[in-house]
Length: 223
Image (cartoon, rainbow, N blue to C red; front, top):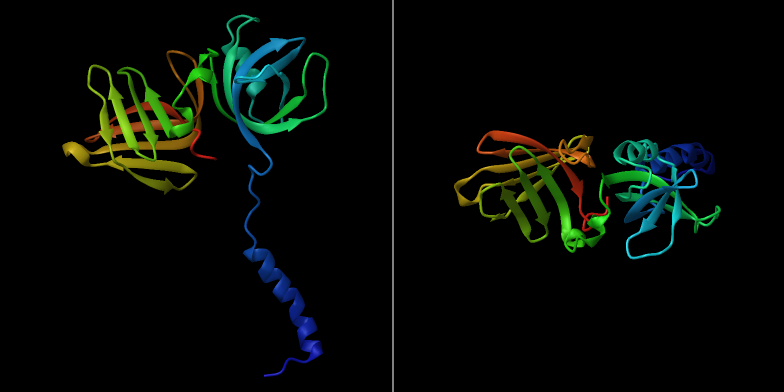
């Protein structure tokens, strides 16, 4: 069948509409970088110093993360230094006493210590979860996951990962005669002992019994 020029002209808007529907949604992380470092307050600003660097950047909350209020609430005194794991864009515009500005678009962690910069395993982890009363933690990577529980030896496990509706994840294992499941969902979570803030809420289930906790994505997962 031959298409006349008039018919082709009529079909152009339809083709354009199909192309728009086929386009993928824009990546919200495009142009941003995940960074870890030290937070401190000075000169009426919240300053961010990346791990292993001397440069300092003024924090601007560009993504509605509430990082300014969260840091103010977590610091016990004005001189306290915090650890921040965040995603953002470095801007060149300088302010007095700084080397520029970081426009924060996402907050992964905020902790009442600056020592988390020394974590040697962060870059290999895809996910870390932990909880209290009783104390437990899970470290997951491309090699499997390790379950640590208070009073018990570490338990290495293979696992199956599944994406859940709403942006959550499920990690499950049935090795060693136990059914172990870790469920995480994007929700602000506060450690009841340290006050640390994480971007994921976690639930650990072992043979049907569950305990609650918090979690965050490791450096091996670029989300």
